[in-house]
Image (cartoon, rainbow, N blue to C red):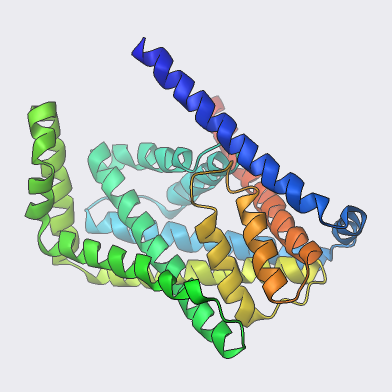
Length: 321
C-alpha cells in the first residue's frame, strides 16, 4: 500500500513538472514570432555551432580533471578517460531523464568499485557538486555586479552572493570539524544500526582527508570557475551562430542565472523555466523575446545533441556488459 502511494506521488509530481514546462513554453511561444524563430534556426552559422560544441567538450574534460583530483585525495585513482566516459553518460541521463539525479547515480556507480565504497564515491560527487554550485553563483554574482555598471539594475541580484557564502561556510565547517557531521548523523545510527554507523565513519574519514589536504579543493574550485566560463563561452558561440548580439559581459550574468534557475526541481530538465529566465533578462536588456527563446532553445538542443555521445557510450557498455 505504501509502495503504491509513493508511486502515485511520483506520478503526480512528474505530471506537475510536465504541466509547468509545457505551460511556460506555450505561453512564451504564443507571444513570440514563431516563423521568425524558425528562420533564425535555419540560418544558424555552422562554424559557430562547432565552436559551441568544442567549448562544451572542453567543459566535460575540465570537469573530469576536477573529479580526478578529488578522487586522488581519497587515494582513489581512476583513468581520465574512464571519468570522461562516465561524465558523458551522466550528461546523457541528465538530458533524457526527467531528473538530474540520474547523472549523479551513474557517476557514483562508476567510481564506487575504485573507491571501494559507495559512501566515499558519493561524498566525492557531492563535494564536486557543491564546489560547482559555489562557482556558478559566484560567476552570476560577479556578472550581476558588472552588469550594474552597465545600467542593468536588478535589486534581487545581491542575493546571488548568499548561496556561495553559505555553501563555503558549511563546507569549511565540515572539513575543520568532521566529527560534528558524525554527531549530526547520530540519530541515523539509532535507526540504521551498524550499517549507518559504518557509513558515517566512512563519511567522516573522507572529510578528514579533504581537511588535511585542502589545496586540491582550491584547485578544483578554480576548475569549477573555468567550467562556468566555458559554459558562458558555449552560449556566446551559440548566440553568435544565431546572429544574436549578446555581449560577453552580459552573457557572464545571464547564463549562470538561467542555469541556477533551472536547477529548481519544478520542471522537466529546466524546460520552460530556463526560457522564462532568458525571456525576462533579454527583455530587460532590450534584446527581444525572439532572440531569448532562440538562444535558450538552441543551446538546449546543442547540449542534447552533444549528450547523444553519452547515449552511444551507454549502449556500448550494455553490449560489453
